[in-house]
Length: 83
Image: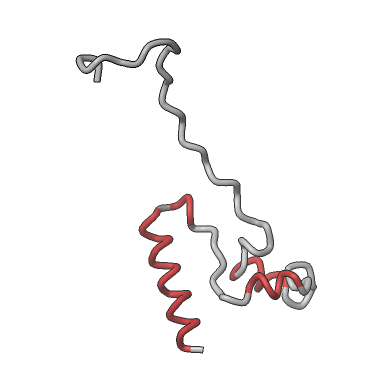
């Protein structure tokens, strides 16, 4: 059980370093199992699951895409001077 707690703490610290876009994550290693059992929708556990297992319950927003860099015009390869 200590190892699982350490993993959750490490995941939280990692997510904090990545920023607000990654704050939606499961805080317990068993979240996906509980979600498969229907705990995300069960009246007795729904609120707890939404707080501690948002990813497993499908509550996280989709990740934001980074804009693509403009592509070069098709045709020739760039010369050394252009690089």
